[in-house]
Amino acid sequence: MARIRRERPVLLAAILSALAALAAGMNKWVVLVLLLVMILTALFNEAPIIEAEPAPPVEIEPEAPPSRLPEVSATLSGLDIPVMVLSDDASVLFQNRAAEKAFGEVALGAHISARLRSPGVLDMVRETIATNAPNQIEHAERLPSERVYMVRSAPIEFAADERYFILSFRDISEVRRIDRMRSDFVANASHELRTPLASLRGFIETIQGPAKNDLKAQARFLNIMLDQTTRMSRLVDDLLSLSRLELKSHIAPDEKVDLVPLLGHVRDALVPLATDVGVAINLHLPDGKVEVLGDRDELVQVFENLMENACKYGQEGEVVDVWLKNGTGQPVEVSIVDKGPGIPAEHVPRLTERFYRVSIEDSRSKKGTGLGLAIVKHILTRHRARLIVKSEVGKGTNFTVRF
Ligand code: ADP
Image 1 (cartoon, protein in one colour):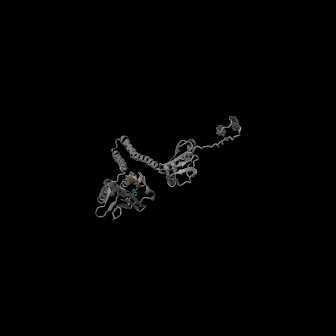
Image 2: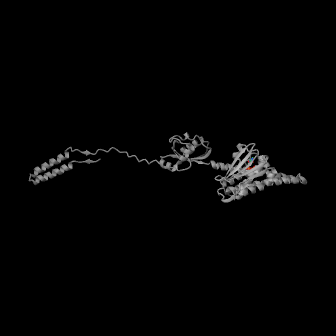
Image 3: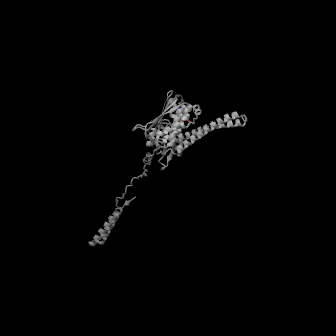
């Protein structure tokens, strides 16, 4: 505590006055007595002692660090995957634009359950908040479109007093679809090969056993075996075509191909098959060249597959018309039209899937592999062209390729 004594200036003044009095010639004893009186007065005088008021204790609060939330939100807003930031009571503090688009807007501060009702996701969030450990779970959304997400919840590591959690959604729908396609494909391909193989094995055993000495039966069986091996090699050829096409699907072909002679060539090659099934293929071609950018061999394969299908499946109509249209300012179009039984509408969207057939028996009996239209679709995708299918049950089918 600070104490300020006032007596010092008084004493000084007394001494100075005494010296002045002596100098003025006063009696030294009188001066001495006066000096003593002044000293005693000064010492015992109740001179105010000014004590400095104690300053009220000032409690200086440690300055709170600024919240990191705006910084985090700004960073996450640019991400193209849905992301939300949650508080430690699971309310939504921030969601980026991708999250708004995927799940709709949610009022900030609302509990996460206001937007996501999946018990799995909510349990996971609760667990992450309780344990501070990251978790992830697969979650399917039905609306606005069917999607599968890998949802991950994790704490954001900040100073101990700022607890935020991040909820991110990685869209794995496409990965799941491709996985399913791949395993379906392997299952289908093995199944297609297993059937002729089993039949071959059966005939070989018969020829080695019961039909060992029956030359007539052997000749019949060998014919069937030849059919089965031809079927297997067709299937393997188609599978190889598909895999080759997949490898170069991103490279657009740049060769100029004239469709007029190409369609004539395909028709000629199919005459034996068409005659076999009693069908006439009529070409309707314009005069002059009709050129498109393409790969000649691949385009031959497209029109071979489509004309062969029209002959095989539209055989009752007895005629297949092939139109090549090239109006000025219009896209080049090739239409293959049969007057067969047609295709029920529910099958049309799936025709280009691998191994998809309206009737498996019908396709097998016509030496089909179920891969013809899948190959057509692959080639056309590479050519940036479209396949348009119009069919009416009882009237016939029109497959149009639009370049
Ligand atoms: P497939 O080798 O079985 O012919 P595709 O992929 O070429 O396989 O055709 C798939 C299926 O589409 C066929 O099995 C058949 O059911 C149907 N289809 C294709 N073209 C026609 C057509 N012109 N008329 C009727 N059905 C057809």
